[in-house]
Amino acid sequence: MLPHEASSPTPRDLAGRQAAAHRRLESGHQLWLATGSDGLGAHLIPVAFVWDGSALITATFAHSRTVHNVRAHPRARVAVGTTADVIMIDTSSSLIDVAELDAKITERYAVVSTDPRNAPEGTFVYLRLQPRRIQVWNGLHEFAGRTVMAGGRWLDAPID
Amino acid sequence: MLPHEASSPTPRDLAGRQAAAHRRLESGHQLWLATGSDGLGAHLIPVAFVWDGSALITATFAHSRTVHNVRAHPRARVAVGTTADVIMIDTSSSLIDVAELDAKITERYAVVSTDPRNAPEGTFVYLRLQPRRIQVWNGLHEFAGRTVMAGGRWLDAPID
Image (cartoon, rainbow over all chains, first blue to last red; front, top):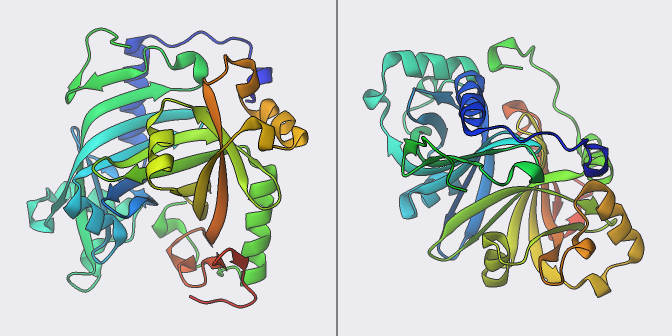
């Protein structure tokens, strides 16, 4: 919907936005992953994910800009959804070994992505993206009240 | 489409992918904009855009992480499309004054976004994102041959 077509929709309340975030996290399987490191600016990739109830699990090529950035600057910014209806997540990011992952998670991930376990060892690495802050908005009218998680905790009341 | 549902689609050739890029640039009006600067890692926002034939024109809040990053590190990474069907663009980014923009461009931008010219002076700044490299792919099977522009020039033959 373009701005001049909108009929001043009512912004969702905190509970509604948290529910939307949970839905997107539990049912989605692709996200945008932005990482950066000193001197290199930002990198951005689309990648598959699964949600394990408290963090996003994904995987990418071991010798990639993304993995280089996560090693150097373990904070990644993630978008789930669309440009018009976004769940924006600031995460603490870390590399994890497949042995650290619950088999159910690696199985779920293999459904939504090329299975990293099928490639020669060392081709892919898994990443754990732990949300610190989550913001939910679907237009300029929802900028206020968009923060639904802060400091890693789902909020009880709006803070913005 | 999930990986196990795909029926080994044929990768598009260079001309097909360049045509897809042109279509998305000319008809799209929202993109993902990733910027970074030293010490801050990556920032990511969804934002409206118009294509002026050679660059993406967008605008955002003047006192924003994005603008800070562009000033510090004038390279932005842009995604147009969806995670499953992406036009990925590495750009040289710069801040521009509304006076530098053709009136047709600012008018077209005002159709797809809140009009920066209607806000108090200094609220928004326009950005020019000049493509240096463009990559087009809609799945792992299209990783080869995904570069369609390099060094700011549309390619005559595949390079990857």
